[in-house]
Length: 411
Ligand code: DI6
Ligand code: FE
Image (cartoon, rainbow, N blue to C red):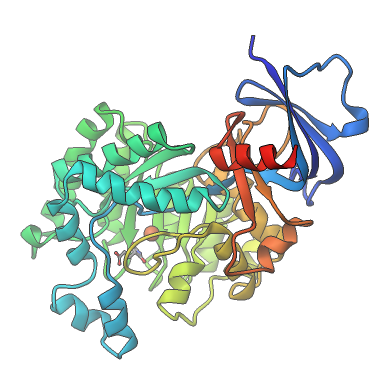
């Protein structure tokens, strides 16, 4: 029997329905890693007698945040490249000079597993410190059998050793490695051939691809998705970031969990995503870093009822972001999401983009994943920026060190 814990003296934003779900003097009763009961303190059922009580001192309690799109595992970094771009160099000039994704591929291949883990763990801790309790981590900088496996093993180890749940996505179809120059179809053959062994190692939860002018074609993407389908793996896609390749409609035809970026998404793509139940994952960090001007079709996605999620897209080239709340803020400022849509986008909708229905809301039966904030209303997550109002997280009913320290100072 898992012991009951009471988390009280908090303001709750349950996000359990279609609004904030605010409860001023709320309590959450947890049993093991699940929520047993949520509601006003005055209505707590008398029979729920907790073995442990946590006084949260009036903090705001929201569902733990879900970062549903990151490339967190890689070697090196690309600040010098960002400086070159800010001094006027083009992507093509940088790529010809050996920069871009290929420079990160070289640094990743040169790094051993321990070094990759240490670097990724530091980045994961930064996200956790700002409220993240579930994290998606892609491969995509190894682009060779063993290097991709190493990155996916590191991603699994992040979930094993840090207070966060990690889901992995195989992104072998991220870029063409130099040894396959001029032989893109041969590389896609290799990407598909590596997948069964990666799945057998238990390091793949989903399969992703980059379908765009500087990525892979719809036909090549389809072959990767067919390989995933043969193994019963769900798919997701970097789609319509720089052009309209029809990637979203292709991904939707495979029942994609999500289509991500979407600045060039068409009405047909929206209709296909709606029919398939795919989530639109918006990535304002890349939009900001690339100084994009074309917006994803937010009004059309909203009108079609396509759920919208928001993520950091953490990667060293286009979005070295370490704050998911800041991305929610940017989604409001740049993309005109409402604060409620943006916060839903980093909680329940982001969970859905990972195929998860057991988190992202405070409701009985959901995972006991919470974030604690020194805020009075969740819309402040899309108001303040530059600071960190998070006072810790609870993952599966276990307070992280920060949350425990917070509760200790408050009781
Ligand atoms: N889209 C992006 O913006 C990143 N990958 C992708 O598919 C860029 C990754 C990088 O520049 O390292
Ligand atoms: Fe990405």
